[in-house]
Length: 216
Image (tube, rainbow, N blue to C red; front, top):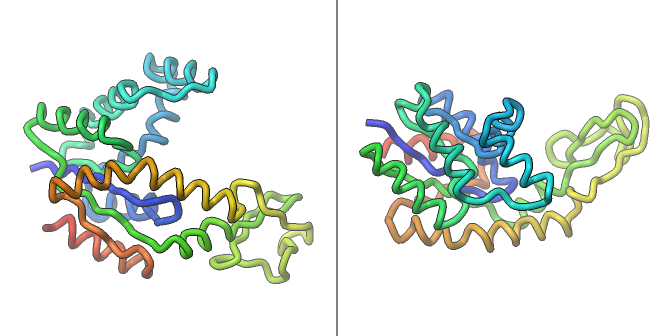
């Protein structure tokens, strides 16, 4: 029986990394809405052209268009064993649509792992990036620091922090994520499908916990 997994986690929680690992470990297809939009836009499909026209106007892509893209993607052969949904659904409306879509296929969402990482750790992860003004090479104060603070190892140019990577911007991103995602977390918790995963541990430990959750 196909398994349908909704993977939740805030920016910096390592959701994308874990989704890629789980795909290799389980054979489930990884469906990222960001990748889907880029694919449809690049291929100039009917859905992609419509999405691009809305984005060019600065408008949000409506739920029904996103749902249509996901529905088309799930129908492909590589999804026969099931999928890991990453970035979808984003709200209870999309969650209801997912339920109807899977019910029509004689299935349902199997489990919803929620990778939880303390806010201070997320801020540290997301605000640690520094970029070389000359080469564009990216460093991270925690994971890949330069040999000399503020200086690029490759060319000696100054490192700077993009607006997107400042603590203030990161805090705003996290606040917006929680505001938008809290209803979805409650939605799946009430259905008994939400499983909290400790994300502030080594990557392989998080993977081990996720795989154990999927096997259940």
